[in-house]
Length: 257
Image 1: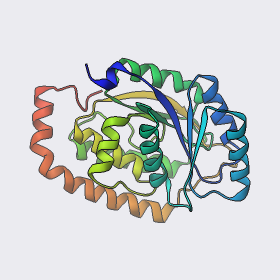
Image 2 (image 1 turned 120 degrees about the vertical axis):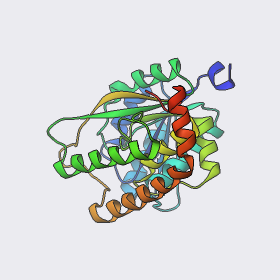
Image 3 (image 1 turned 30 degrees about the vertical axis):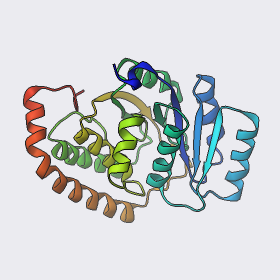
Image 4 (image 1 turned 45 degrees about the vertical axis):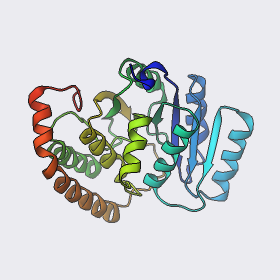
C-alpha cells in the first residue's frame, strides 16, 4: 500500500480574484464539513483582501496564500497545490470562490477519494437554466477534444473547476512541465494526469451561474487560449498513442471511470 493510501489528509483549495461577496459563505461551508481551507488570493483588490484578512483572523483552519499580483487561475492553482502538498495535505479539493459550486457535495468528493485515494475525482457539471448557451455548447466541443487527446471517454467533464486531486502525482506533473496560467488549466491538468496513468472518477454535481455573478472568463481571449491548448494536447497525444491504446486494450484501471 502506498503512503498516500495509508494516510488521507484532504483540504479544500479555493483560488480567488475579487469575489469578496461569496468567498466567506463558501469557505465557512467547507469548514463546517471539517475541511481545512487553503485560499490563494490572486492579486485581489483591497475590498477582497479585507474580507480575506477577516476570515483568516476568525478561523485557524483557513490558510491564506497571497500572490503579489494577478497571474491567472492556473498560476493560483499551481501555487495552491504545491503549498497544500508542502503543508502536509495528501489531497486537495478545488472549488471556485464565486458560488457556482454546491458545497454540500464536498463530502461526496471526499468519500470517493477516500475509497480511491490514487484517483482524480472530477466533477461533472449538471446545469440549471442559468447557464449561458454559448458556454454550454463550447463545453461539448472541449469534451470531444479531450476524448481524442486521451483516446478515452474516462473524463466526463474536463472544464468543471470542482474536482479533487491526489497531490503526490499532481505535484509531480507540475514539476515535469509548466501548466497554463489561466482558464485552460483545468482541462490541461486533467488530460496530463490521465496521460500519467492517474485513475479518473466522475461525480455529477450541480453548477449554477449566480445572478449578477462575477466571471473572469473572456470570450475571445480565453477561447483562443483553449484552442491553442487543444492543438498542443492533440500533438502531445500522438507519441503517447501506442501506450494509451495498450492501456485501453489491457483494460488497466488508470484513466477509467
